[in-house]
Every structure is written in structure tokens, then in C-alpha cells.
Figure (tube, rainbow, N blue to C red):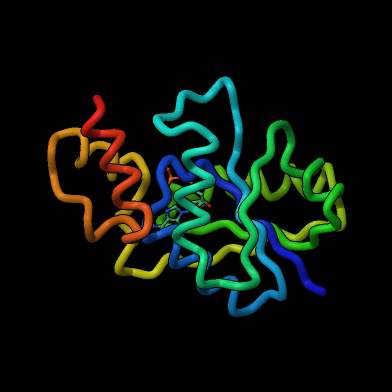
Length: 160
Ligand code: ADP
């Protein structure tokens, strides 16, 4: 049973993330989408909110599970017998950091492979920060985030 993990902040989930989730779920048996809980990184949405947005957005994929982790990704990978780490690549600017992380993770856990999935060109400009920037200035983010997460995201902005 080939298990993969797609880790990230998902603060909040975007259509770019969902595209990677959908394409990966069609090639592995089981995909864990894992929200990074990092107390040192300031996020707009709590872990519980990010999990809920992901749960709603991925409900139609029966082989996708939503979870969270703190600390080292490789510790979670080892504990759950995961062989594959999935990373999305938008541009060369993503590459340098992800390349280093892939080498570090292999050093810490030699059995794990990092696979890079190239963005869908439709979403190559899309990031969580862009979504927050646009929504923060009252712009329309409907086309940028999964419809199932839209209300939860907008609630946060209306409450600010
Ligand atoms: P971001 O704030 O940049 O969206 P995340 O930590 O939530 O960052 O991203 C998690 C993973 O998803 C990373 O591997 C990132 O490269 C990838 N990713 C994010 N947006 C896209 C996109 N539009 N297309 C492809 N991959 C993406």
C-alpha cells in the first residue's frame, strides 16, 4: 500500500493545493494531507480551522485523510510508515528551498522519497499569502479557493 504525505501550512487552502491533492490522490493508494503546526510561525487560521477547511474541500476523495503534525516531518513519516513526500512546485523560486528540504529529509530518513508535482499553469501564481492579501483588501477570492472553504475563510475576514 503506497502511502504519501502532502505537508504544508494551508493558511488557508487554495485551489492550487487542491489541484495537487486531486492529482496525487489518483496515483497513490492513500494520501495524508498534513497541516504543519508551528508555534513559531504566525498563521491567520488556527490548526483546527485549517483542518476543517481541508476536510470540507477534500470530502469527495475517499483515499485522502487530513491530519496535522508538529516538530519534524520525518518523525511523522517514520511513525506512519510513509514512503513518499509530495511537494508542489510553482516556480524556480520554490525549487531551491524544497531541494534543500528534500536532501535534509533523506539524510534524516533514508527510506523516504520526495516527489515534486509541477503546478497546474492555471494556479501557478496562487499562494495562501496572495489569497490573504486580496481578501484583506476586500477583493474577490471566489475563484482562488475551494468553494467548500470559501465561507470559513470569509468569516475570518469579516470578523477582522
Ligand atoms: P503557500 O503559502 O506557499 O501556499 P503551503 O506551505 O501551504 O504554502 O504549501 C504547501 C505545499 O503546496 C508546498 O509544497 C507548495 O509548494 C505547494 N503549493 C502551494 N500553492 C501551490 C500551487 N498554486 N501550485 C502548486 N503547488 C502549490
